[in-house]
Length: 254
Image 1: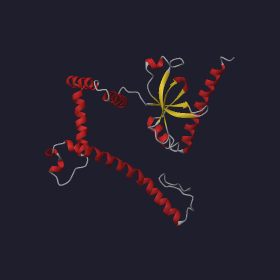
Image 2: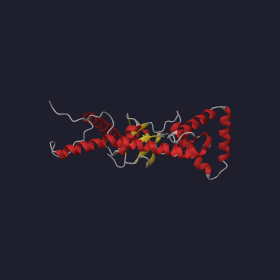
Image 3: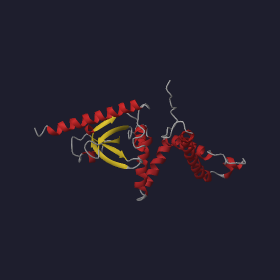
Image 4: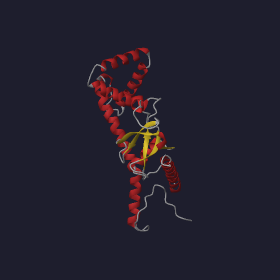
């Protein structure tokens, strides 16, 4: 029988039978298990505390749970905020709510400084949380920054009619966002023709993980052979697209 290392055990370069190697392996294994849990708990606690500190001062003291209890209830402000936002959405769905929203938008349109900020933020939220939104739901490969080099991009919306009329090519353009590593919130935005994009059958979340880890965490099956097969398929698709593009550019010269 061959010894198999559990998936969470971290292997080191030290001699396998030494006490120092075993202690180091145990420590790194515990760090791998406890680290993500601690960071996740810290992030959730920070968000809940921030929402509580923001919402609690807005609630009259007589309606606060800690007024009648000897301790504060963590998350009470978050629960109230969720209920309030849901109630706001319910009220906005009827005729009276829509009328009030239209009046509010009309009022904001008269504010020179507030208007562009509010409209931009509103459009972003509508695209991110609207059921009909299609932004960043597909992942693709684009030949960038040089020939033979391929980068992951998130596919967004086609350009507007005014922009599309001024773009060269056959008009089949799409806007893409190329995130940077390791921070995917920054990157490059540009328009590219659909024929120059290789669409990938991987979720946006896996693509973001791939970018943030600088390629160390590959999408697909956890087995190394499965990862290599996916990478080989992606590379083959990229080479096929490059060859087709080169054949297209050579045809007019002939």
